[in-house]
Length: 294
Image (tube, rainbow, N blue to C red; front, side, top):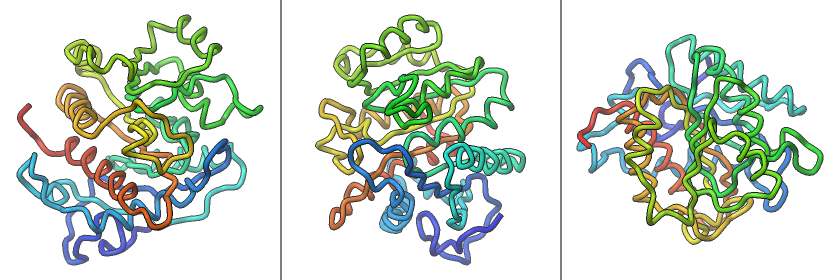
């Protein structure tokens, strides 16, 4: 696979630092079905650019996690024009990485990438749990006539029989989605944003314990005051510390096997939102690969 030099890749660390990669950042700025604000095609570029400002030392883990992980960044490449072809493209990339024993961290792009990202994991594991951060349930059968819409991302993942979903931060759901949700309660657990004050994270631990987990993080899961740089921002969402706690629990009690972070729509002149997303990516990788007490 063709990687960027370290200095140009995620985190921008020295080229001379060279250890065998355990994780690969895959820029995949697919933008086909956005329905409100656009710009997700620029998300991967701006996340990588902002990551060069992220402090490499993690005060929580008391180390520089990148030295323990080994992170490479795939060189940007043309994305297939047709949606089905693009999803198959990212599926094949993740499959190649998994066959090499490498953790894929895909940077979207819109949330419609996730069914393609997760396909090789579905084929590899008997059961897999999707840990889903989002403002929206994304359980629509289709949206604007497109069954591969960003608003149908989790529904398409649930087309696979061996998948279950745990969602955090949901605060936007249609009536039709609730009908589907009620029929599939055994496969879908939602921690609603409105109930944050009474979330039972011990129940979450039990749900996730010893499972193979894939993280899909739509940045509109964050409260819109924290993350307005996304296509469909929503108030009443997640904040940083509570999000880190959830990711730490998942990393401690389950096996995180892959991840995607999506739906950043950069706003010119406002770098903090790109930086937040870059730091989120580094935190997910750090908690996945560095042992910590919790």
